[in-house]
Length: 108
Image (tube, rainbow, N blue to C red; front, side, top):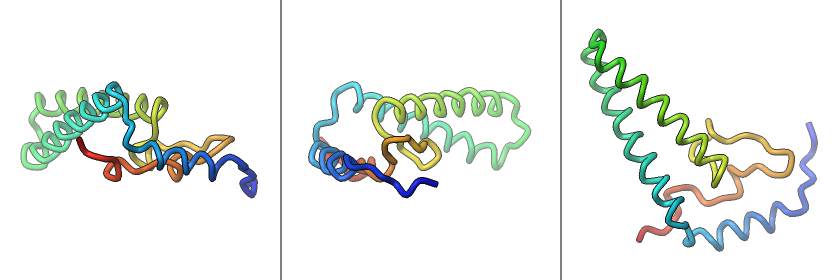
């Protein structure tokens, strides 16, 4: 494992934190859509806890869970990872530690 020779990491981290209030419209819309679909997945999970054989609910869960995974992966690739599961090591930097967490951004 490389000891981590990233001369720009500190600069990148400072840039990310200084610009945390500048989420563009598309990024904000993407984050909102992820929140909506995430809510649907959680609600379906809770429903399935009490109705484990409901085939329609299982189908909806599969559909929305795949959608959430795709949206989360696209968001991570374009902006920053939202969960540790969507964070991937990059040869240049570990983005998970360089950007503000979603709840640390400014709310408008």
